[in-house]
Amino acid sequence: MLEHILSILTVLAIGFSAYGLGRPLLRGLGVGTDDLLSTAVWSLAVGFVVAGVLLAVAGMTGLLAIPAIGGLTALACFWGLGELLNDYIRRCERSLSAVVRQPHFQEPPQAEPFAPPSRWLRTTVFVLAGIACLGSLIGALAPPTDGDALCYHLELPKTFLAVGGLEFLPDSDNSTFPLLVEMWYLWALALDGGVATQLLHFGFGILLAMAAVVLATPIVGRAWAQVAGAVVLLVPSVTNQMTAPLNDVALAFHCTLALAAWWRCGVDLESRRWFVLCGLCAGGALGTKYLALLFLAALAAPVLWIAWRWPDRRRLMLEGVAVATIVATSAAGLWYVRAAWHRGNPVHPFFSEVFEPHVAVDDEKPTFRNSKLPLGRSPFSLLTGAWHVTMHPERYGGRGHQLGGLFLAVAPGLLWVRRLRGLEVLMAVAGAYWVLWFLLRQNVRFLLPLVPILCVIALWVLIEMQRLPVIPRRVALAAVLTVFLAASAAAVARSSDRLAVACGLESREAFLARNEPTWLAADAGNQLGNQGDHILSQEHRAFYFNCRVTRENLYRLRTGYDRGIDNPLQFSHTLREAGFTHILLAENRSDRGAQYDPTLTKLAEAQWKAGDTESLVKLADYQFADIDGGIRRYRLVMLQ
Image (cartoon, rainbow, N blue to C red; front, side, top):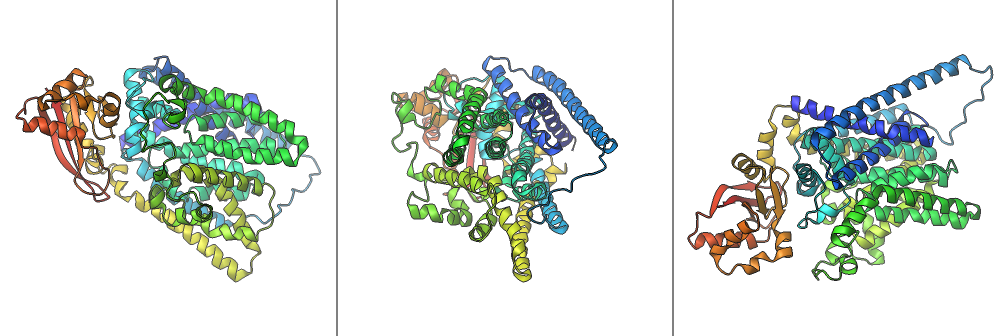
């Protein structure tokens, strides 16, 4: 339990530090401080972008050091606490001043264009969202076991910390991806460990809900906007992502705020300084994932529409695009420059056929291959895709990333709702993004940036349901609440197997032995080896090994080492000369789950069959049963 408390305190310290970095910048811009929630969301968004850029610059100059990160975090944390206290005092002073100087006559408050949500409805939705968050928190308190996280979201920050900088890893395509979120995970790893990174991404799920409130407030009012934020936390994909250190929720957070900031100036015609915030948030999105390019391209749809529909706003739109582009490039450009420097391609490994014509590209894996387009590209599939993605998410990336049935269920209601100012803008962004997603990469997880937008659209349908007769309204509302109840229950059920470790009744090591395939091999290697070891591994999961791990398939593709082994007895000697001290053999003994290229296994077994058992010494040999029914065999072998 003490470990969990330390992890929670670590994430709180990071949050206060980010607030301390972002709040002065927000104050300097003079925007985004409408209320306490808005101030917190914008300050944290800006602060995390600034912190990530600073860590990246430190990494690129080889100045990453755990003691320095700890010391600077302590200073920034106290600064953030001071900023919070200062904001609290100022709000108290304004409240007292308003009471003392209250005029004798006050204008009556403006009536809302529609009735606010009833108390019982708000309470029900908030309680269900809270239960879903509790389920996600239980999952986040367990040690990380997600495959992508252990392959690169956590493995890369761990490696960068070990070498003190952002080292170029030629046998890892992920090492030249935009790594802003991974810089935050590096921050958490420097202070605590893997559980802190999961809690950090859990926190971004809460921030995503708050960002949805910020986006929805000027459209439907604050009362209904709060309901929209709660609905975000009832989307299965969001609650599932909150239990693992990935980057999709953080991407959706920055995309949502980029749209909200653009809205304040481009639609509501407020201060042009909002375009600076739009650029900062767009930079945060671009620094997180290439997918942000699609969202920003979709955002161009309403920009062009407004410029065409209202000629007097064309200059404003042009200025906004210029300012946001300059700021976003300043915040995220270093990742694309780094990729271009090392790979010759700013978006490596995509479009390698264009940027890297001198490099041999696998003809079976072009940038836009059919295996990534399960829906196809026909107009009929474009129209029916929402049904397929909702009803059969396992075909498009997995049930763990499903969006749930709410959005599809309320979609017909858009045919009879009244027109709402701004709703068409959100629908234009969502429609443009859907088309780009459909044409380029059909994975349901990549639809997560649309979740806050879809929640606002669905919320307007729920608001309009108030105009229905009593019985149809109650039936429709009961159906919606049933969907919410199922989503809440699913979030809790999904993390039920982690309850023991989350409550401290089971050790983290025992949990990993049951749930993480590589843990036993990593534990054996860590006890018998040292940090100077170098493992050539068939398994991509490498986070729990304390030494350097290289993926065998990428190393083989780059060097062709296997083609130079004519005698089976040369195998271990060849790898030792290349600097490897161990190999990790992985094979799947069933037709389910991950499959591994057998080249390394065949080479090792050929040397054993040739009678040389002294050069290849097994340190661990075991089988692991996957949750999906697969049976994996792992062998950690030391090269003598």
